[in-house]
Image 1: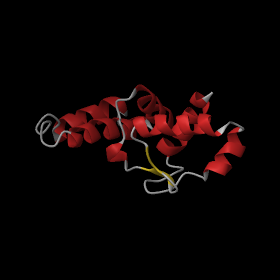
Image 2: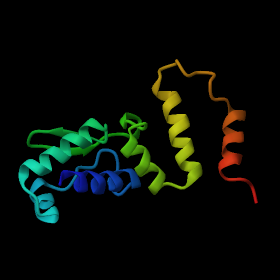
Image 3: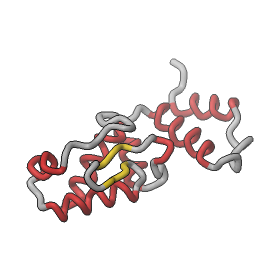
Image 4: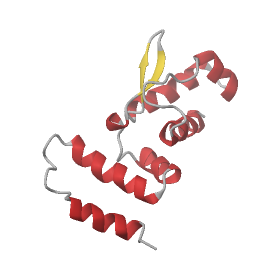
Amino acid sequence: MHARIVRDLGMRIVAGEFKPGDRLPAEATLLAEYDVSRPVLREATRVLVAKGLVLSRQRAGATVRPRSEWHLLDPDVLYWLIQTQPPPKFVETIVVGNVNDFDGLGQGVVTVHSLQVLRHTVAPDP
């Protein structure tokens, strides 16, 4: 049952409806919107936390984390990105985001030329 909430909120976060730093709606609002029990909603929040999309704090609710902290290679997050972003933006998010996430380990792997080739492959010039 919590999978529907995870999918819906995850898609809304990735699509930009909730920006980094935004708080998700209050627990009472989400309980009424999804017509679920508190444990089901809390389990959905735990899953979103595990995917790196939100930070949950007692009495403060869930806050959307910066994109750089999302687990971009998580299968669900990856699917939501594909569904909500045009192909060039999706590729840029994955390639550039992951290279930056490795604190220098990926330096030199992605060059400007390779990004241009990749961009042309995904969205050829008319």
